[in-house]
Length: 201
Image (cartoon, rainbow, N blue to C red; front, side, top):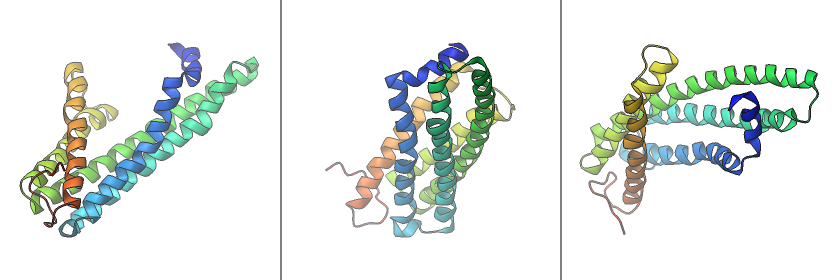
């Protein structure tokens, strides 16, 4: 859409909704990770503690990243078309700075996300069986997905072919997060600390 199209997006209701969802979802995801790491006694291990520290790093950086978008960049965008040419030049320079900071925050959150998934996944695979081990495998799959697509691309190691990149995320992440939600629900209703099956009622 070009630079001006990017500035106009701030008035798009779908964009505004997505921006606030983007801001809220780290809090929800961190709460789920905390439930996995600390809500189940046998997962209170060094791996669980390191895992929750990784998710805290991810959540704080993603929240800061989106706060910067909502309360700085979006204000510049809203002002852009009312501004004189000198002010527009300042907004363009600010946007370039914002883009650099956004990418820096993004890389740190990828590292935190990988640490969180790696250690929680390892804890679940080693401590449980049945659906607990399955959920742990999805945590570990998220690590592989993040390393092979996002981190490798940011470090310019390689570029994953388009079809693999576009299909791998929807194949792993939404299903994995749904299973984590079912696992948390099951763990809350089972006497055993680590459920071996899903409970749907």
